[in-house]
Image (cartoon, rainbow, N blue to C red; front, side, top):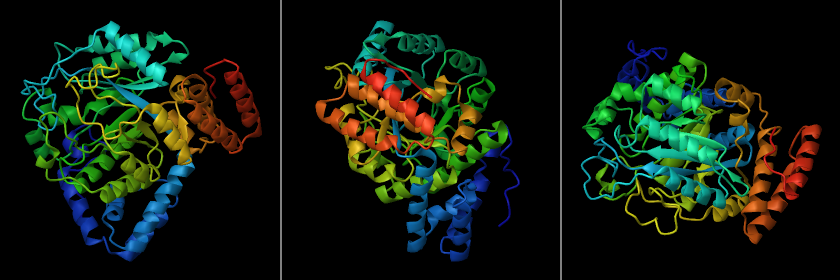
Length: 476
């Protein structure tokens, strides 16, 4: 099939690195070859080299209807995930600072026309209380969330909040990494965020379909498709080299969004030499005045799982996230196919980590997995995973291309695995229930032997003993 002449992954322009014509041609190509056994075999053989796939190749796998090849797709996704990320699952929690918003997004209850949702914005002292509550749960990594409102949520408020979060040291608790999910902004403001020491800058595209994007965003700054889609370019130029992609599945057709996601990843790799640090997989959920059944592009759990598997094959080195939007059953189904990070014990209300705040009406979406962090940690261990609270790479400067090279060289078992074990040990000593601690100590003993380098293994064992004696915050 002919190539789209407008498509240019090196371009600065959104409509060229996410060219609609290229996506349409890609989806047509995938449809025409979804039962082409010879081509699918070739793509799978390439995928087995674990160097990734192009968006066209990955779309063929996503559309594949041949049962034996679909089985291989899921098996290969598991193998790649294990190869690059091991059996670790990193845990985090969202922290909603404010739900004031001037945008008109029709899928989000924060939209400006919603006059009955309570508008809330935390003070710095309230943020400090929330952080202490999260630290008492055991969290070490947060994702800060806020609506777009220049008056109520200016960049200065976000920066002050980040400083507050990093400044709270409560008992043995400390937030060691603050990821930020706020609206697209200027290079100058991204420089300020970078200077503030953020981890990953997260921004969901919502949909890559420009026509649909404009209808879903009828008003507000977010209605500018190009400015929003080009945000990561500005962030990268400002020095933020860890960025997180995501679409809201259910707004447009999943095939279009899948192609767009991978093209965006290819653009960042081509332009800046480093792809996305993470890709998130939210699906539209009920919230306040938002009815998910009003959107006609919902996807089944099986399709959702295949999207995640094909993404893992296409971008082997990228972290993949699933939140408490999804139920325990769904999360258990898809973790094995590529997910490396999940949220736990989450609240999507402003000030939600106070005992009496969960029903204050300010939630962005309904949480489907309402288990406590301790329950999530124990569940992961029962499934054979190592829950990790590690932030070592970020704090050691292993971000952007440095992290990618670290991951590609398959150093996970020598560095990330022992870091995961040590941060899990901290959790067990400081926060876990007796049942979880017993299971965790057994899991740690079983996993120490998986550290390939003998000297690293010995140091890890010594650190684990010192953690048991009261020391904290060791890392490789």
